Length: 124
Image 1 (tube, rainbow, N blue to C red):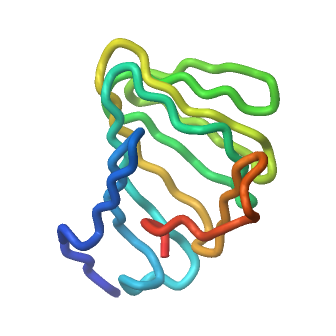
Image 2 (image 1 turned 180 degrees about the vertical axis):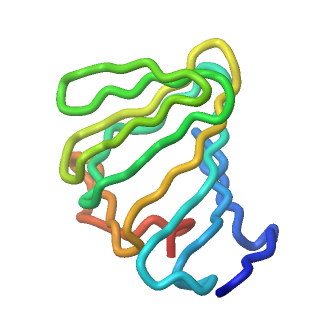
Image 3 (image 1 turned 45 degrees about the vertical axis):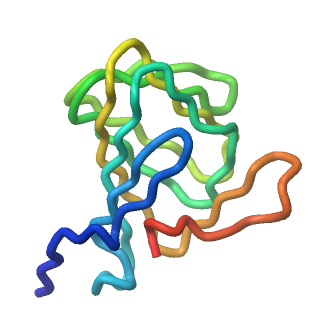
């Protein structure tokens, strides 16, 4: 058993969101990474691909996700399973959004036209 205490060192802020790392290999997990996402109203992440399945559970607000050409809107309490290798984009509506995300700890992200895949820093 391993207890992970919150720490400012586990927080990564991007132009689109704040990710707070929970479980990850650097914090004692061997297989999974989990993190909390907070996005302000009107925010949108870039189109990107993650090579591992992700599970998103919205804990507050609502978000819209387009993946593989299909768009879904999720509200608090709803969970979305995003398959690996599918182009996706996550956006907020008119309110802040909070969600919990889980994936295998070895996931890598890439952006179309970018310089290859890289690990997600908050999931390491």
